[in-house]
Image 1 (cartoon, protein in one colour):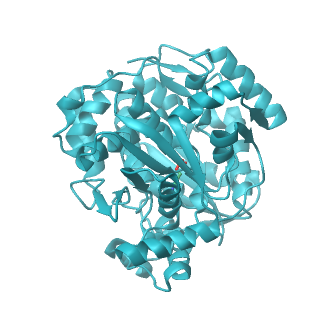
Image 2: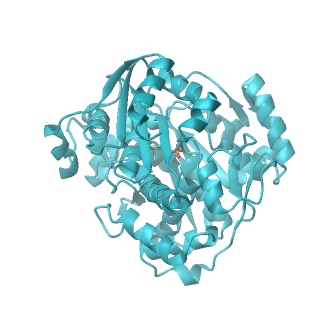
Length: 456
Ligand SMILES: *Cc1c(COP(=O)(O)O)cnc(C)c1O
């Protein structure tokens, strides 16, 4: 399997090369040169890890098979159930629980694998990497738990000081491994992102310190997420189904789109948004235009533009890389793309979209709890709300976070706090470790240099 860029100037990459490249060097996103198809019959009785192996093997041909197996074994042994992503049926909807990893959010499914893959690949090539990223909460904790203690990797995560949720702050800062650096910036999430972007743009600094990223555009993250669509299909026993996906950067739902292209009988993907609804407007009206970001109860879906969207555009435009490049260049200028009726029809053959504002989200948590005695988190609630609005039968709702991560929203909805899993409870008594820095690019660079001086 070889990989190429959505903008057409990069092709013929092996999996490992594509993985290390992250964003394609022509500014596009990396996708497989050809999407493989599967025989469902062969996969249907496999356990999660076996299924992961079969699917990964279709996309990875430059890593030894036994090594892929070991990586999968290691990555998913940190989950609290052998099923990895169990599915439960509640009152007519299926809930696919993606929160059984170490940080209780679906990002663990990909980032546990990514961490081990980094360690493996760097060991083979005898190199090292320094991961740098900014987080408003979930991604940072999942990335830290994916990379902590890994050889040849350091991870620097910036978060806005005092502005991430208490549980997220606790998850990130109680990690004791020496290769983890939490940087709390006296500023906002946007400030953190700006600092990270500026540092990546300093090409001399970037290459001197081998900077890398783990953001959601890495192909390996999409790959890891394809597996649970298949797993859920087999476990549900439903013949033709819908998936409802709480969406932010379009990564998770894009994995479902690939699963569909591989031959999984998905009738349609239901794209759920909160009031940050650029993707809802795209699917329903062909209007992909930027508006400001509103803070909601589901912060991991509070996005302005969706970083993985370009991957879908590539297929929507019948794999015309020049067209993708033109449209993305235009979007960078005008901040909007308007889609004609003909294309919109094509989109709507594959997707439906519904949005849930704050009131819908709270009502959904409440109603679902009253009907089933099962507590869903505010992200999952957007998906369940969308499933209800769609009126379809046999919808599998992706549950992207454990409700205990968002106790305030749950309290608001049902006047109760969700029970904390033991692994979260244990963190309360641990010391927090972070370095508080000013909102200043040079200060962050200096901090990194000082901490890395013995290694370079
Ligand atoms: C990241 C995240 C999402 C959104 O996933 P995308 O791949 O960005 O669309 C939804 N819910 C939770 C809890 C998340 O952490």
